[in-house]
Image (cartoon, rainbow, N blue to C red; front, side, top):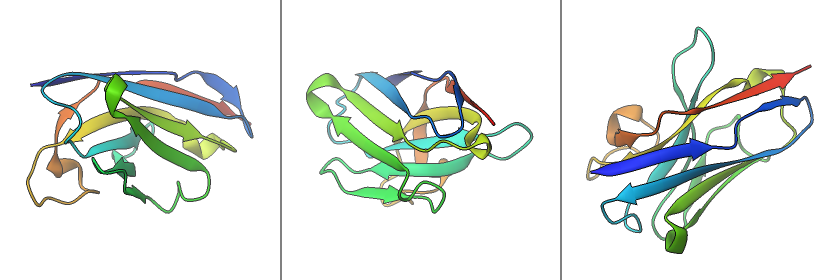
Length: 124
């Protein structure tokens, strides 16, 4: 079992930056592929970024160049740095732990454990 707790979401203005954190506890964290997803009001949950245990990263097109995913295995924590935020980035951001061997790094169905999410609101 893996427990994930996100933090860092808040109301910001367009152009601002935020850093989201996701603290993991429970099963060994270091070998898990970890991801960030987001769900905007009235929309489906969508992939944002994934980081493998060795540090390889993968990003959705909306995140490339603006968002950075990172992990600190010693602290059992992953981060999502959000820069140049736009109103369209308003969403609940959730972290997740991959749980399907060989499964996609982008598909929500491949992630087994989820946090409760943290709300990011970007005003224009």
